[in-house]
Image (cartoon, rainbow, N blue to C red; front, side, top):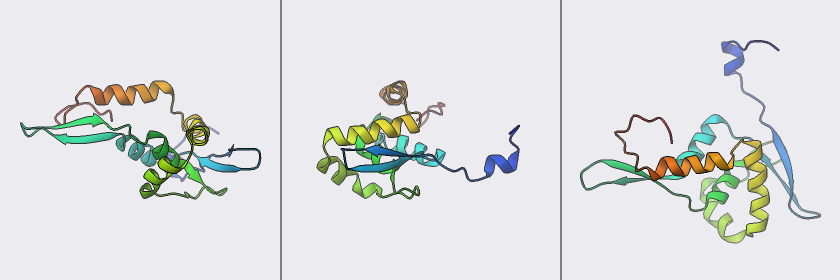
Length: 138
């Protein structure tokens, strides 16, 4: 395949799905996120705060990071999401850290979320970025 034109770029891409072995008998599936889903996931890691001077500041919000990623990527074998954002708290509270880590590791690999990416998300938010900032980063 050669150069992508407009039609190829806008065509719905088939997302990769991967089976995650949770125990000897138990497994689940995770899938790639679309660009929009990845953006929304990254935005969920930020919290908007109004300052006394009226400016808006964005701070990191890493609470339930693993559950947020799992909810965005857990799917059936055809790629249909199994969970919704309202499930984040319940999943985080009810699933063992060991089991959710298996899901998260597979999701990170499939979606190219490196440890450096996670650090950059945190660094970008720790800088006290304001709504007036010209940066396009999350």
